[in-house]
Length: 123
Ligand SMILES: [Zn+2]
Ligand SMILES: [Zn+2]
Image (cartoon, rainbow, N blue to C red; front, top):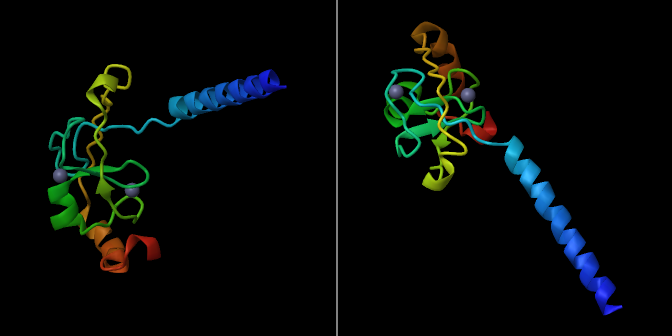
């Protein structure tokens, strides 16, 4: 009886590990190498990189002084991008896609008027 319990425990642990493996494989954050607005380099270990929930990536200067914590693509707020551990950068490297799309100030203004000063969780 004890043996069967141990077996069940082992099997459930294995299932959990397989499940976690697939989740990890599918949901890797894309680390974009530059600020979308000003083109400033934002390597994987940069403490200046900010992202929205869609991984739109900007430098902290642009987020604070130009975007005022409003993502020009989705209207959401920004958080600091987490740093990927160095030992995983080889397997999950920084993206090579340099997505540069400077903010169109006229188009952005209406979104800014709508969301600036409103907490991201209430937009
Ligand atoms: Zn920038
Ligand atoms: Zn966004």
